[in-house]
Length: 355
Image (cartoon, rainbow, N blue to C red):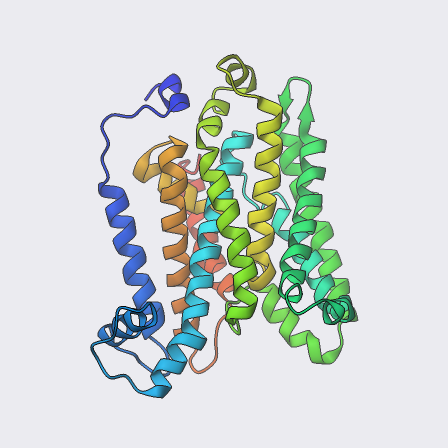
């Protein structure tokens, strides 16, 4: 496919088979995530309960315990996994397109680190402020704090790496390394200052976790992620044009600087919202866009939706592994993604196929 074809979203045919496969994978992972656990729930019971909840009526009698576990414990967790996986994957794909570098992702550039520091600070020091907020605004406190942290880091990285001739990739990556080091130091200090009652919760949260999420905490994050992912998908054509370079994108009619600012803000919103409830989950934003690009090609109009579906599915599978591998305890999901993602990335790098 030529560069000009990539820029304008032209492709050979309209093969939807990869999307059918990704949709089926997500559906299977979703049902497994709802059904597998200390209390097993059969797929037909799950479908019957969900059908009844949306007003279509159920066809199987399900016990009250199973219904309570499904609706109040597993369903919020599975929905969060879908949203966060899609958010991280789409953010990674958008950043790789914006910076024209396959190493770009919210974790490596320090965006997730900035969001994590801001969210951890809000947990430790912001409890009185959160308690003083009206009941309708309190659930927004943590995700907005994470968004502010992600926005600050994104602005710093963008300001350091921009040059008159364009984006300096070496400066970009070095800035990400430095900011990640600062974030690690800040998190260490926050962990040291945290009261004993908060320490275990914060450590588990920093390693990445989907546990303990209820509907009250989920819906503000869901709104932010859905808005961010939708806006990023709408920016697919400008991202295609930016693959040719900023000058070429300008000459074909795109307002480059406003588009770049939009991309920076929206990716910070997506990454900040994802980190707010789950903590740091590595390698999803880095590796998933590579898999999606292999399946559907470089056109962002297909790449971004494919990355969303694949990221959601992979995070559901990682959560299942974390829940089952050390029963009755639970392995943090960030540990699972790093154990899987880091060796795979090194293997691809060794074969010189990562880029």
